Image (cartoon, rainbow over all chains, first blue to last red; front, side):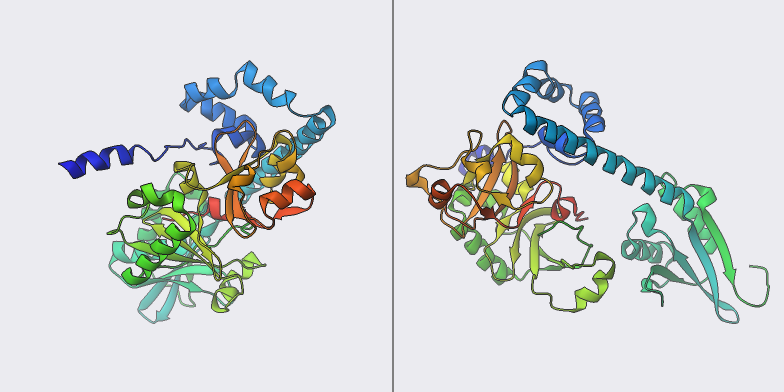
Length: 194
Length: 198
């Protein structure tokens, strides 16, 4: 009993800090992150109290009063530059995601035996190594992350599971990967029905 | 130090004897954590070590993993909560998330508002940011010497934004008022901060 009583006050000592859902910084540092506008909206939607405390008139003016005019100008310029940079990076990222394809390739290994090679998943922010393990579990086959000659990462799953992989990807990561961006390729000389 | 993104790498379990040593080292370096240590690092918990490879060329990181880069740093975590990182030959330095949870445990200095944007983009911390009106340095009795780890918070903010090893003692900073104070630290939004651990 005594022990329980001792532990309870200890636990409350860890301060629970709120982190911004957009830039992951504590909200008070959002303005330096380059995605200030989005962060502000996020905070307003999710934590109204914190939002009011942080973006109230007084808070904003007291922020400004502590800097000289020229320093303020420079900071504003810097912030604008950073914001533009972040926006550009995001746009580029989205474009890359839309343009890139996840390739599921069926490679003939030995007449009737095949392996399935999956490339292009890392662009969608998925970790090849972990995914390989997942796929192995799902299909009960060997599955590993391999590095191709060009140095890019790919997942090799033993057995012909290309259709199933596609289905599984859409089911689990359907939000991130549009169906049109997944293509099935057969990599062999002779044609045969799968 | 962690300006670039850190590629995900293997984690390994820490031997319990090593874990005990680390815990002691951590406590010796930060007496402020004494009341919370059971919470931060319970005796029974399994500590994981994650090697951080800081390579100059991120796209070649798999080459550098094999090499023993001079800046070998290990991050210690429990499950997916980062606790502290330790350079090859330096003191353990708590992760900012840990500092946020226990702000009193690490000695703190304060920078003025103008310096925040430089700090958050990874610049070295300079003395004027600390000595100006918005900055704060401890009194002479609580002087922090060069080589010790300090947390840096910012004027008008509650949370700490930078942590690292001081290059100059606080008294020296007050005296000189210029020059580099902290070369490389762990700041909000750097590679270590963004690193995902699950």
